[in-house]
Length: 137
Picture (cartoon, rainbow, N blue to C red):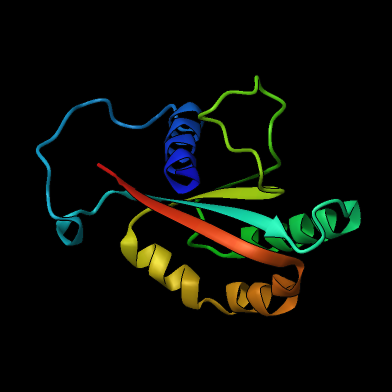
Protein backbone atom coordinates (compact mmCIF):
# COMPACT_ATOMS: atom_id res chain seq x y z
CA UNK A 1 0.00 0.00 0.00
CA UNK A 2 2.80 2.43 0.92
CA UNK A 3 4.60 1.74 -2.38
CA UNK A 4 1.43 2.54 -4.30
CA UNK A 5 1.04 5.76 -2.32
CA UNK A 6 4.66 6.71 -3.00
CA UNK A 7 4.09 6.08 -6.70
CA UNK A 8 1.11 8.44 -6.68
CA UNK A 9 3.13 11.00 -4.71
CA UNK A 10 5.98 10.74 -7.21
CA UNK A 11 3.67 11.43 -10.13
CA UNK A 12 2.08 14.42 -8.37
CA UNK A 13 5.48 15.91 -7.52
CA UNK A 14 6.67 15.40 -11.07
CA UNK A 15 3.75 17.25 -12.62
CA UNK A 16 4.02 20.06 -10.10
CA UNK A 17 7.76 20.46 -10.78
CA UNK A 18 7.82 20.04 -14.57
CA UNK A 19 5.52 22.68 -15.98
CA UNK A 20 6.96 22.33 -19.48
CA UNK A 21 5.78 18.76 -20.00
CA UNK A 22 3.73 18.24 -23.16
CA UNK A 23 -0.01 18.33 -22.54
CA UNK A 24 -1.14 16.23 -25.48
CA UNK A 25 -2.53 12.74 -24.97
CA UNK A 26 -0.89 9.93 -26.95
CA UNK A 27 -1.76 6.34 -27.64
CA UNK A 28 -0.09 3.87 -25.25
CA UNK A 29 3.21 2.54 -26.63
CA UNK A 30 5.39 -0.28 -25.36
CA UNK A 31 7.96 1.19 -22.96
CA UNK A 32 11.00 0.00 -24.91
CA UNK A 33 9.76 1.90 -27.99
CA UNK A 34 9.37 5.26 -26.26
CA UNK A 35 11.93 8.02 -26.43
CA UNK A 36 10.46 10.42 -23.86
CA UNK A 37 12.09 11.89 -20.80
CA UNK A 38 12.67 9.71 -17.75
CA UNK A 39 11.65 10.80 -14.27
CA UNK A 40 13.75 9.03 -11.65
CA UNK A 41 12.36 9.45 -8.12
CA UNK A 42 14.23 7.91 -5.21
CA UNK A 43 13.14 7.73 -1.56
CA UNK A 44 15.65 7.05 1.23
CA UNK A 45 14.98 5.71 4.73
CA UNK A 46 18.01 6.28 6.93
CA UNK A 47 19.50 3.76 9.35
CA UNK A 48 19.36 6.55 11.93
CA UNK A 49 16.19 8.44 10.97
CA UNK A 50 16.58 11.02 13.74
CA UNK A 51 20.18 11.90 12.82
CA UNK A 52 20.34 15.35 11.28
CA UNK A 53 24.03 14.84 10.46
CA UNK A 54 23.27 11.62 8.54
CA UNK A 55 20.51 13.40 6.64
CA UNK A 56 22.82 16.28 5.74
CA UNK A 57 25.58 13.86 4.71
CA UNK A 58 23.18 12.07 2.35
CA UNK A 59 21.99 15.37 0.90
CA UNK A 60 25.63 16.36 0.35
CA UNK A 61 26.19 13.08 -1.49
CA UNK A 62 23.07 13.54 -3.62
CA UNK A 63 24.26 17.01 -4.60
CA UNK A 64 27.44 15.43 -5.99
CA UNK A 65 25.25 13.77 -8.64
CA UNK A 66 24.63 17.20 -10.22
CA UNK A 67 27.99 16.96 -11.99
CA UNK A 68 26.78 14.03 -14.11
CA UNK A 69 26.00 15.43 -17.56
CA UNK A 70 23.06 13.11 -18.16
CA UNK A 71 21.18 14.58 -15.16
CA UNK A 72 19.10 17.36 -16.71
CA UNK A 73 17.29 18.39 -13.52
CA UNK A 74 17.74 17.39 -9.89
CA UNK A 75 15.60 18.24 -6.87
CA UNK A 76 16.50 17.04 -3.38
CA UNK A 77 14.11 17.31 -0.47
CA UNK A 78 12.67 16.02 2.77
CA UNK A 79 9.07 15.23 3.70
CA UNK A 80 6.75 18.21 3.65
CA UNK A 81 4.62 19.13 6.66
CA UNK A 82 1.39 18.77 4.73
CA UNK A 83 -1.94 17.72 6.19
CA UNK A 84 -1.91 14.20 7.56
CA UNK A 85 -4.03 12.01 5.28
CA UNK A 86 -4.30 8.29 4.66
CA UNK A 87 -2.80 8.63 1.17
CA UNK A 88 0.32 10.54 2.29
CA UNK A 89 3.45 8.60 3.19
CA UNK A 90 6.08 10.86 4.67
CA UNK A 91 7.99 8.09 6.45
CA UNK A 92 11.13 8.62 4.32
CA UNK A 93 13.86 11.04 5.39
CA UNK A 94 15.27 12.24 2.03
CA UNK A 95 14.12 12.08 -1.57
CA UNK A 96 15.60 13.05 -4.91
CA UNK A 97 13.86 13.60 -8.22
CA UNK A 98 15.88 13.56 -11.46
CA UNK A 99 14.99 14.17 -15.08
CA UNK A 100 16.82 12.42 -17.92
CA UNK A 101 16.33 13.03 -21.65
CA UNK A 102 15.71 9.34 -22.36
CA UNK A 103 16.25 5.77 -21.15
CA UNK A 104 19.78 5.69 -22.58
CA UNK A 105 20.76 8.75 -20.51
CA UNK A 106 19.34 7.16 -17.37
CA UNK A 107 21.22 3.94 -18.12
CA UNK A 108 24.47 5.91 -18.59
CA UNK A 109 23.84 7.67 -15.26
CA UNK A 110 23.52 4.32 -13.47
CA UNK A 111 26.99 3.26 -14.71
CA UNK A 112 28.62 6.68 -14.26
CA UNK A 113 31.64 6.68 -11.91
CA UNK A 114 30.19 9.57 -9.86
CA UNK A 115 26.97 7.62 -9.28
CA UNK A 116 28.90 4.47 -8.43
CA UNK A 117 31.04 6.47 -5.96
CA UNK A 118 27.87 7.93 -4.42
CA UNK A 119 26.48 4.45 -3.76
CA UNK A 120 29.81 3.23 -2.41
CA UNK A 121 30.37 6.25 -0.14
CA UNK A 122 26.84 6.87 1.16
CA UNK A 123 24.96 3.55 1.16
CA UNK A 124 25.99 2.97 4.76
CA UNK A 125 23.53 5.75 5.68
CA UNK A 126 20.34 4.11 4.48
CA UNK A 127 18.41 1.01 5.42
CA UNK A 128 15.95 1.17 2.55
CA UNK A 129 15.68 2.78 -0.87
CA UNK A 130 12.65 2.81 -3.17
CA UNK A 131 12.96 3.94 -6.79
CA UNK A 132 10.18 4.93 -9.18
CA UNK A 133 11.11 5.45 -12.83
CA UNK A 134 8.54 6.96 -15.15
CA UNK A 135 8.62 7.76 -18.86
CA UNK A 136 6.99 10.95 -20.10
CA UNK A 137 5.81 11.24 -23.70
